[in-house]
Image 1 (cartoon, rainbow, N blue to C red):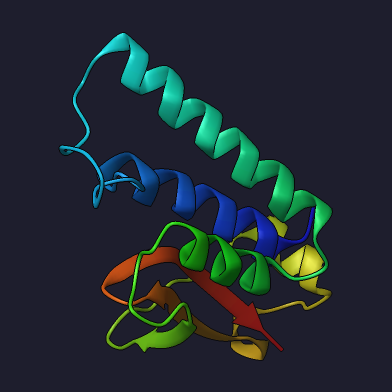
Image 2: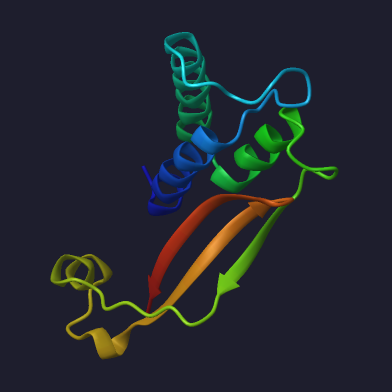
Length: 125
């Protein structure tokens, strides 16, 4: 699984727990066993769609539209300012660099309307 897909999946999972995809047709999500099973099924379905797709962003955009999360189902990437992280030794090795000074870093949010679906830490050469 690509880093983008993995980051998108993890953060969508977190976002989904706070957002009831059917909020327009029924009351807000309640903390019951049945609700938890429903959310788990929804998340597993999304997980399968992301893993099977060639683009996590397009999959999230389609999912956003299917669940009426915004008036226009469009994923927008927004850079988060003021955040800096140092890459780990494992990340340096995976990127094929010797020193963190060879890398650039950015944190990006993928949003659908007011909903943050993904927050990704990106290191690049």
